[in-house]
Amino acid sequence: MNRNDKQAYDRGTSLFSPDGRIYQVEYAREAVKRGAPVLGVRTADGVVLGALRSTPSDLMEAESIEKLHKLDDALGAATAGHVADARKLVDFARTTAQREHLRYGEPIGVETLTKTITDNIQESTQSGGTRPYGASLLIGGVENGSGRLFATDPSGTPQEWKAVAIGGHREDVQGALEDGYAEDLSLEDGLALAVEALVAADDEIESDELNLVTVSEAGYEIVDEETIAELFADATADDESDETDETGESEE
Image (tube, rainbow, N blue to C red):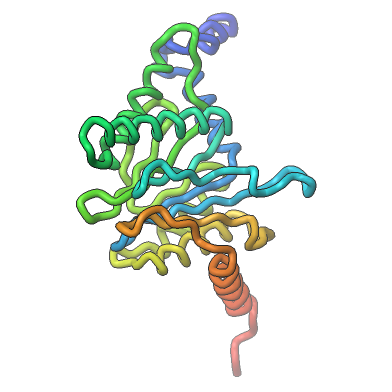
């Protein structure tokens, strides 16, 4: 394939290349990777969503950066990637959840909402004059008394996870989640694991750069700054002790 042919497939949002790729979808995934990391942890009592909120300038109000969003009373989302695209998807998710309440008088299921969102995402990959969403969402909530956690992809594919990270430094964060995850985690354990995993993404972050929420039968609850500071202190203390063990001399 010469360069001109490749550029033709590169510019088309609804064309497959001869090797079966849609380049614009792959570029959208790259946009997600350039975002700050977010994660989700499913526990026995619900779901924990966490995000690293970094500002490009000290003059910017950190509260203006929204990475965690309430979708319904027992539904939340974490977003990574192109902020404007993510907001559009969050608005679509909220409208879909409200419509379900009006039609049926009950909350929408986590899986049903996720698949409705990904159906909307997928349409942008096969319609002319559009481009894929450069954002991915983690959607967590409670369904039939159990926590459920899903991730969306710019291709329109939904996947269910026990614990997952998206965005920048995904490999480091996901590795920490895999090392610390257990099926019987409580919400408190899930919060501690979320902080440890986010610290693994950047050892120079401060506690005020972290955002955490829990989604359980009690609803969507924002974790206060004092609790985050305590969890952050424990996580960084553990890291320091591990480094001391690795570099310290053995006793005689």
